[in-house]
Amino acid sequence: MNKKEAPKGLLFYGVAGRQIVLSLDTMKPRVLMLPKWYPNRYDDQDGDFVARHVAAIAPHADVAVVFATVASGPLSAWTECEEDVDGAVPVLRYYYRARPSGLLIVDKVLKLLLYYWCLGQGYKQVVQRWGAKPDLVHVHVLLRTGLAALWWRWRYGLPYLITEHWTLYLPFRSHTIGWLRRQLTRVVVGHAAALHTVSKALRGAMWNLGFRNDTSVVIANVVDTNLFYPPDAPRVPQTLLHVAAFHENVKNLTGILRVVSGLRSTWPDLRLRLAGYGPDEVRVRHLAQDLGLIADGTVTFLGKLPHAAVAAEMQHATALVSFSRAETFGCVLLEARACACPVVATHTGGVAELFEPVSRFGLLVAPDDEVALAAALTAVLTGSASFEPAQLSSDAELRCSPARVGSQFAALYTNILRPAGGQNSVQPSPHSVLVSC
Image 1 (cartoon, one colour):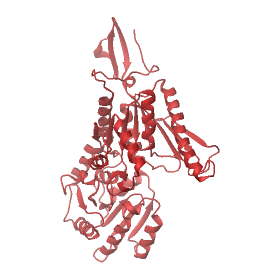
Image 2 (tube, rainbow, N blue to C red; image 1 turned 90 degrees about the horizontal axis):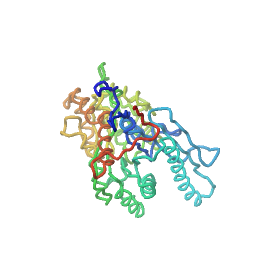
Image 3 (cartoon, rainbow, N blue to C red; image 1 turned 180 degrees about the vertical axis):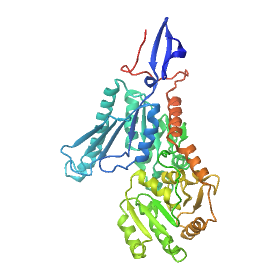
Image 4 (cartoon, rainbow, N blue to C red; image 1 turned 45 degrees about the vertical axis):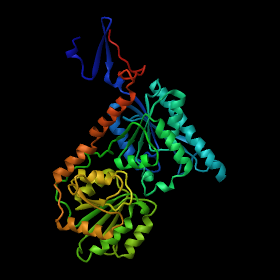
């Protein structure tokens, strides 16, 4: 067969006068994903940004996910495993009892042991499925996941990559990191093949804490630009949207409510739509009620929305508003941008990186500055601050599309797995080689 006649997706190597046909898929690295957060039976949006990273990587690697978490409900045994292996990304979800013995002190130790037992079982199942060890372990959010990867590095010689999203390392929260966690994190990060953060601000915050790695890269979160895109219909005037988990200490939803309440006299038709859920929802609802924002229809609580519904809200809104005190990235800010929806947000964490050049993609204010937030929202509502819709959506595509992010991870994997000699160290799985003699 002439090489020009080769079926698409096959590589051909001449060996001793014969031709070996090797599927491109067999040259993909085998990557074991080890997330701290991942969609599960108790919360299908937990770590959904991690799942989007994994989905973007899947075309470039043979991936499998092993995830373990404490059960929020009863289990028939101490642990349960859910296998979801039919899709593009095989996932093993393990759940372990919250109170395995009923003794609080004992249960703390037991739960830690059960967590690592679950990861060990998952590792064995993945190796059995592949017929080979992983080429790389990809940790998503520290710390217990990283300790498992560090053990496998010492035990099996497996390199591991760390992806970090957590606001824990930002100055707003880093004072809560205890001494032992600091020491363990330094070791885990230092022995990783690379450290990936979703923003330069997060990388800098980790470095300032001593969590350094010689190979550090910044790759954005993923926005599904097939779902989040500009609308065909006109936007609903004077409609603000907020999308976030209801964690008041970080998201400052009550600050948004106070600002909107103050704007009502100028904008009596102003509407604020709140999408999300979380532990502080009751507190936020009570304040909205006390301010009279529910009785007059100013504020609507939308609850937990699927991504398609969030996209529809962004396509209708005049602007998205965020008043967070800490953000490592801000996925919803870029999802809104992909929908050509202007954003008013806070200058915190990694957010500022997403708004360069200044004033091109939205307006930023200082955290907790309610006067500045009111002024920024007024500028958007009056049209004195305007943004080019095509520029907004195209920027989101360039930064955060699955294809863009997936290709960046593929390049990182190649760099990690290439040995000193320069050839790729990935070896085909024994089950997947096709030979034509």
